[in-house]
Image 1 (cartoon, rainbow, N blue to C red):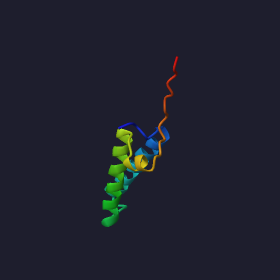
Image 2 (image 1 turned 135 degrees about the horizontal axis):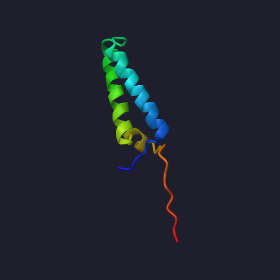
Image 3 (image 1 turned 90 degrees about the horizontal axis):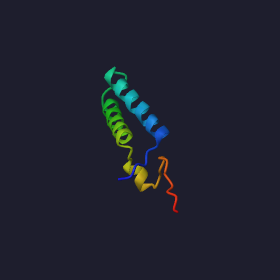
Image 4 (image 1 turned 60 degrees about the vertical axis):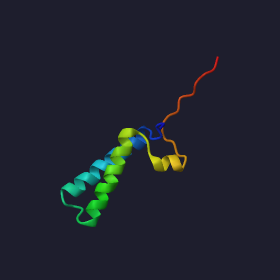
Length: 72
């Protein structure tokens, strides 16, 4: 499983995940909205930490920097 989540993408996912967790924890989101917020936060944080997003793989999106190998 090759990384397909780059630096900026990863940072955005971390910020969104933490923000949604805090909104739910402080009661800004309630009921179904809180549950959806926690679900989206969990997905965002997990994909940020493992640097792989299955949806990006299906859509063939890669925001990670690729290393080009030089041949001699």
